[in-house]
Image: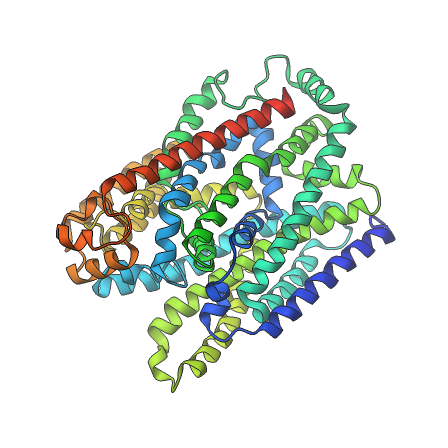
Amino acid sequence: MLFHPYDYVVIALYAFVMLVVGWLAQRRGNKNLSDYFAGGKNLPWWVVGTSMVATTFAADTPLAVTGIVAAEGLAGNWIWWNFLFSGMLTVFVYAKLWKRADVITDVEFIEKRYSGKPAAWLRGFRAMYLAFPINCIILGWVTVGMAKILSVITPLNEWSLILILYGLTGLYIMLSGLWGVVVTDVIQFVIAMGGSILLAVIAVNHVGGIDGLKTELNLQFGEGHHYLDFIPVDNPELMMTTFLVWVGMMWWSSWYPGMEPGGGGYVAQRMFSAKNEKHAVGGTLFFYVMHFALRPWPWILVALVSLVMYPNLTDKELGYPMLMLELLPPGLFGLLVVAFLSAFISTVSTHLNWGASYVVNDVYKRFIKPETEFKDEETAGKHYVWISRIATLVIMGFAILVSWFFDNVKDGWEAILALGAGTGPVYLLRWFWWRINAWSEIAAMSGAAVGVIIANIIGIDGLANTLFFTTAFTSVVWVSVTYMTKPTDINVLRMFYRLVQPGGPGWGVLSAEERLKSPVNKDEATLFRSFAYAALAAMFLLSVMYITKKILLG
């Protein structure tokens, strides 16, 4: 038997805390969609930021990092570290704009920015596209990560346990809505991060500390190995074929959930839930600092230890849970199991709530049963909340089904990156260039999908080469379509500008008088300062990451 009675006590305590929070959330009530999907839009920055961090810390994340380190060393993490550049733009440029947009989902934004039937069609299509294929793919790799952990730490059938976890999580989210999600996120992040740090300390000490770890790496891979390189300057193949593409192109060109150029998805959902613009910016900044500069290092240390302890392991991602099983004493083992349960539940709960928000707010309410069909707002609100609960269950079923088709976490990451290649510039520019229209987004999404298919047909190998080709192909498509189609109606552009107040030189279609009426971002200099802050913040984060690496690994 793998579990000690102490472990069961720890797991039971965790379950009790979650039940109490769920009960409190249910008593608080969800009167309308704003309550259910945006927490009443009154959350403080530290709750907003911690919820973002917890959501992006799933059971799959440490396993994916372990696989990346095993394949390409420390520098392989630039496949996701590169998004810190777009992250800082989100903090200093886009977070306040999202909050001013005053929407429940980022897809609702489409009909505030664009006009006519193309905007309505795009809103409905993108809502279903994100709610089902994209959301379920993400939940698929998250579930595979959790299944791998369960397959190592328990003799029970892992998929039976997955079904139980999904059922409990789905029931919890149906009752609590986003408020319950973010409150439990705060608790779950403390548990999950504490467990990761604990395992890293025990694992490194087991191999003789950092010096012992470095010695073992040298013995196994030779003195000139690249596993500890922060930037792969001594690895020409990695440098030329992937690193330059990641750092030079991916962060602005590719759409990726939680790291969208210009913000979006569940990160934008958390911005909508903040008290005001300052809390939206503060929460987003806290998230990116934790996400890039601090959180990954315990996982990286454990990944390096797993390389020297299990050199012949076929599935390198399994090294992480195997270290848990081998090194942790009773009680602490239960704590780390709880940490991974917390990470899994946190991510699943967010994605179920996030996906349901698209189905209900942007499809059901917009096209099937609009608010005008109800006698009052209270009746409409109660109806939409119940439909939201049903949508949560439906998405949960699809997510479990999709999970069966995944073998490893890294493939899922790469599939999403490829499907979003080349769409980033549209999401960045739509705030600041009036000529972007609904057809621009439609063309970018379609072009990326077609580009990936063409890349596969003509035999382009490797993620970096596929991204480069698809980005170039998609860019040609959406720019051409933008100039071949009618621009957004001028009245819609005026209303959007007054609401969001983006500023910048790309709104020349509006008169100077109209642009100067904006109380914020009156001139290009204000916008330039925001971009300068983003650049300085990115430099700061890179410095912190490099210094942390030097402190930990010498």
